[in-house]
Length: 128
Length: 128
Image (cartoon, rainbow over all chains, first blue to last red; front, side, top):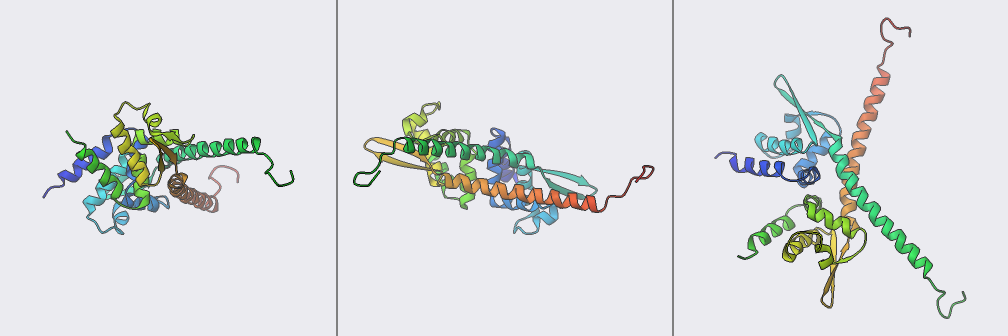
């Protein structure tokens, strides 16, 4: 059995769409999110990063490739050890997009609140 | 030609994994992000939501199903008009996860800064 089908999926995930597509796609997997959660606490060699997961080292490497291709993780090899580092810019891009949506939503609530205040009338049967 | 293959993809996307998997998966598509961007500004009927996209109404409905299944969008039908509303809790969940990663990263930088301050020595050849 070869790893061709998994490789094909990785290439598909890696090559499609806008940067934000690829960042959200990368974060849509619990293993990759766990890797990000580990790496924000500091760099780690691949073998240490792989250790908590019940999967083969090649499978871990495929997940790392997805994280690397979308710019969330950078790896560097010194001698025989490949070390993984978080790249916070990708996380920031995703957080900024979500923050923009929250701002849009909050502005709408503010406008709705203003509208209700402007149009509120004293209720019937109660002193104004 | 039937819409079965697209339906199968939607069911696959909709049914797999944790809530955060499904929210990030839903946001990994530019059409679905555009729909969210529109809906944070206020509710919209499906036909108005579909209007900017060069795709069939069934294709738009498939995207809406993905957004609805992961809880980012709620739709309600009154008479013949189906209206879409944003559900901000799903966006907040994704933003919170990203915020936690940023906090983890910033704490690490703080610790690194403290460590460098504690271990800094006056440089040779320069007055202390």
